[in-house]
View 1: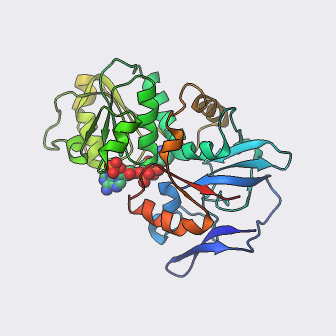
View 2: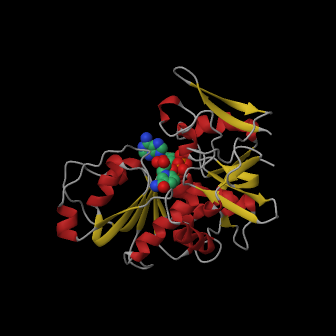
View 3: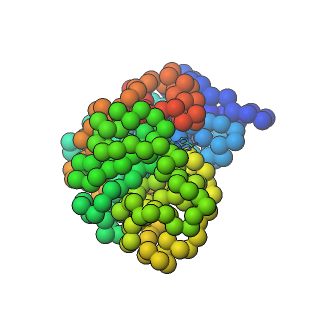
Length: 316
Ligand code: NDP
């Protein structure tokens, strides 16, 4: 079958399309893959210093949507997919049945992958913030790294739910405003003044895809009782903070992980992504569609931070 494969060499990784790749073993449900997508982690899985790939050769692709042999429409993402087991960048995948999520009514395979791992993570961030008490009308909600897959879907979901959304981005503000952001600020403005332990309160809540100095700035500017859902690290893994926002303003730092969510919570989240958490601009969020042959380019672009919105991969 055709597959995009990353394989370790002595000190590098070769990557490209192969026409005769075979899936070994007989475990798992065979899924005929229709769509996958491009995430930052997929880029990392194809470079030597990415430290994501656990096997070699590896078919990357941390998410996929397709059909089982009995015709059931399914999707899967996270756990070991595209990391320690072959993922979505191939005509077929073998997926443990306990990782499969039925494709919710009202979503096509292409739309499910327009959401993909990124949109799923955005939904988990919104759910975490609302579980912590955030509600529309509380004040501005900041989304950092807003032009990326997670960020742009978070903007879309939050705006549709009636929040006043402020986007922080290094890219085109017009596109983010079309998704529902009321204001777009620079990455520097979101990072604020690192020399101060507290800043003027500004955000009722936040979805942070960037980490580093930006997340530290968000924590310093959360309103009393506010919360930030932290899910990403494109701006760095260090977090330099004081305890003051936590002990003087009662703010919360909520960690969000998409990889190990238990399957029941995962299926519920997908059911909500098709209904009350559905991003209304799903089709506009797909800024690029590539086949397996276009992956090399798209993976390089995601690693350079150049992709805007979602890139879906048409496999079948
Ligand atoms: P994308 O590459 O699509 O988006 C990342 C965005 O981050 C960019 O578009 C850019 O937005 C911003 N950015 C890039 N480089 C920098 C930089 N040096 N400093 C500040 N901002 C930068 O990635 P995804 O949306 O797919 O993922 C976002 C993050 O979330 C990643 O770190 C990813 O690993 C993580 N993630 C975590 C998950 C989890 O389970 N916790 C699941 C999915 C993703 P802009 O130009 O608008 O500022």
